Image (cartoon, rainbow over all chains, first blue to last red; front, side, top):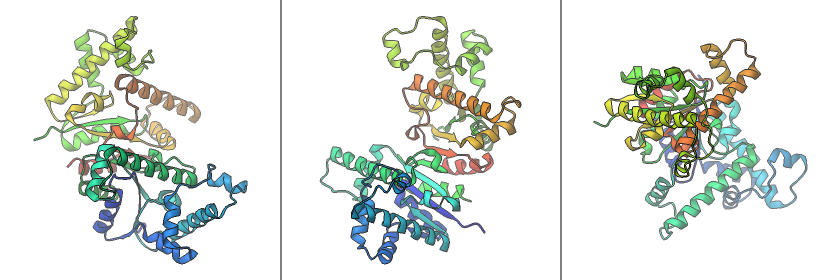
Length: 201
Length: 201
């Protein structure tokens, strides 16, 4: 039987993480998100918090990794760690996907696992829904005004886009990199799950 | 009961028309594509072939219609007809959608019917699949080389994009204009139908 690997790329506040968890629960398969960072911490001896900080920040260099490597562009420890962590992350993701059926959220998994032909989902929504979802989930500071929140959402997505583009040389959110793109504006994640289950049948 | 209106925007060769027909059949609801042009012909007294030619061509002006109207940009009959036809098309689409549940392919229907909150699908695929689908369907000249075919596919999509952008001031294919975007590369349209049926349940 073909291995079932589902990757979820998501805009911040679009409900991608909840979608991933619910799909994994419904299918009774593994769900990986921050667990991957724990595995990297074990393998690299770098602290979990440091790893989290590195992967949440945008890469410093502006060259795609393929070019940057060939011209020996990197010279400082922070960038070195960035690449060590990305490489370990790719290894961990491949190991996990090899082990069992799973859902993996973020982390360029769609690209890293492309040879395994995962089912690649991209989740997005309009700004109004993102704000509503962020406030409901309490994922952001309660004291932020809408304007501040919008700024933060855009910043996080911008970082995700740069991270993805840096390591994959592909455009984050480009439809062609995904099997399906779902607009979760004004939708409950629960109803989206059933559709995905039908899609992967 | 809420009216069910499904609009399908599609890249050429991605199977959007087949998807529309199959969804309409499965739900036993009306399907509209070229039928709309017949209605316009009746209403405007312009010949069907002429109408078809006008809607298949890109608008001449580069201003979005909203701006162009305000500065009285149009002066020739062809452009006048273009706008008369678009306006009639919008009327016909609204009438049809008002009459019964339906699937409408192309024709800016997602934008024209936005107040009715249709379920908006965008269908796309990679070039390889487009070529394969075009050849299987015999929709293009058999004698075309792959290179010529690619050129033709791009030309048609470029025209669709310009037409959409001209009349809606929105970007054709921008994810936010659709509820769901489906990559039909290496997929049978039949399997996509079941997913859509689940999505609109």
